[in-house]
Image (cartoon, rainbow, N blue to C red; front, side):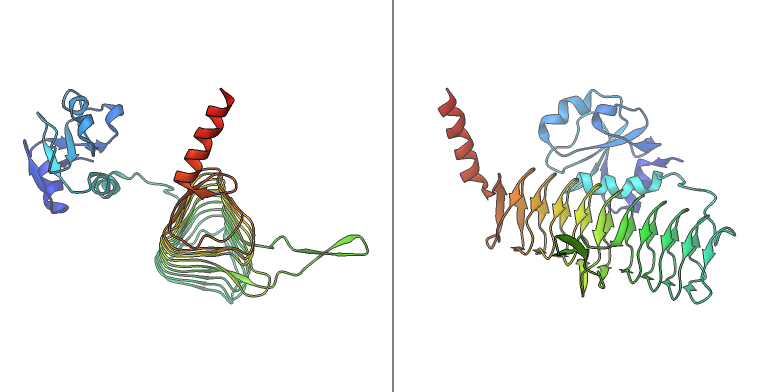
Length: 323
């Protein structure tokens, strides 16, 4: 599989410079230094390393093309290489084709004609799976789940009853959607389980990383908004609401009934208490602890969190005092 640089320029409608007959056999990072590959440069400081590398071509910003190399020119080089990289994607599981004979599917469920169901998958009653959706082996989809078009559900995922997925949702391997929320009430010095009767709704274009878990609501719904991307090993508790186009990085834990706005970024190992609200356009840096509402957009850090400039001054003062 290979492409001429000029063909890539035409396909993705960008300008090229240098030798358009350069043949590209894959994409790589600058440090990989692979011949016949395409990399990207988004910082002027990397131009010297790029120009002396073995890499055959670059995607570069119009203000600083890589000298002595053919270039595809883009205002956002990293975005363009992500699009080009899809051309070099290899097969994932050749055996995934139509409905595998070992799949167990309740007769009341609807499977679109061009959906693909992998080996040893179990699908419960009154489930709906729309066109173009791929379900890899060993997935369990329980009763009354609804899965939109062109979703990808990788091996060993579990969708508990009444889960709803929108279109183009991606669940990486081992994701658990709709487990019971962690709800108990004390009676006679014993913990009594509170039935978790709600559901989980995942809107369009959401991706959820491997081994992440999203619990069902106690009565109503846990919801993840359109375009949100969730990393591996993330925990969303019952009744959580996450807005659109958020980024939730690995090992984040969001406690029950927390409300998160749009375009929120929670970096690695951020944790929240329950029943709080985080407004739109907030970033919480790694290991931040959110203990109360955040009502002003901005960047926050620390435990408990403070605006990042306040936190940095406090840390600097602490270390000065130790001297």
